[in-house]
Image 1 (cartoon, rainbow, N blue to C red):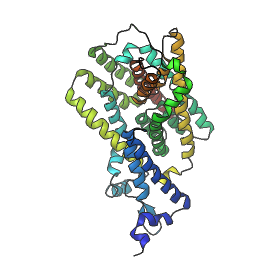
Image 2: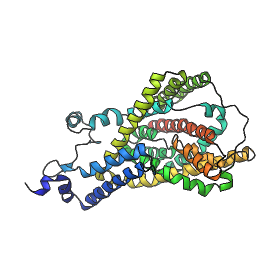
Image 3: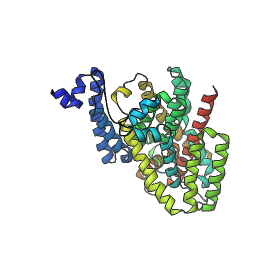
Image 4: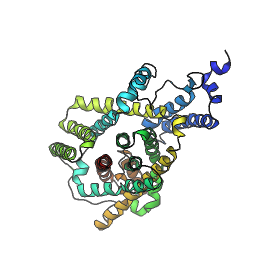
Length: 400
């Protein structure tokens, strides 16, 4: 037995195209870097650590399947025929989780349940106009990238799926891409999560560039009440869920899970709250991140169609961040300069990351400025807005 067959991870590097071999090495190193960046809190650790491990492991653990092919025993995202699927379910150790939770959008709904449980609607209901206006401006990347993607040669469905990255709601991106571009939903979802984690490092610089320090440190004076009762929030959750499901049935799974989580929180069912927050949300997030890492196979990411996704995804998030700040300036002038324009970036609905980024940057400019309540209102509104827009895009795509 030669060494190539004894140590197949190394041996398979010499059995594939040079580009694939180089990409495998690069992705292994990148996975290791992401783990360390996550552990240092430079990038989001909840996503980056399991994702980095999966990325490094899947590109290292390539073995010889037969005399002419190589592969892994992690999972096969492309298998679809019943007989082949039943066979691979007995071999690939992550295939059951992928097939029964990831590829049908269930894992996105579980995460939305968890997000609902940790969502406090007080800020949205205290500042509804401001919150929704900022959220709409922060969808600018979606509206710009959609026609741009079509101009770059993507189909309308593919362009719409990629454009939803600008909404910065990764579970929703997964759900939308499954509906509009199932052939590309793996790279679209991988890119969405990679970029959303990178916003943790990139958005502070964008905020400093767009909002001068004196404005970033401004204090918002308000006389509005913020003690919205649990009864009011429960009523809003029930009626908003029913109305949105009635208007946009295609996104009903996401709406129902999000508002059910909110209703459970406001009803004070602590056993369910603990289950959904500590087990379902973090369990689903962990397996989603680990699965995404194992989907970062060199063969998948070197597909020529992935390059436009990389470019458009980054552009969509960048434009959405800029759009949110523009919305912040609009509210700033509407309120006769009694507003902090930096809050607008929180409308990019990466809950609660963008809200925390905004509050951190504002505090650096002025330690006495507390704007988290406005930022959370915009961020939570962004979740609802991005789901509504995604539902409209999916519906239009199915009608074309």
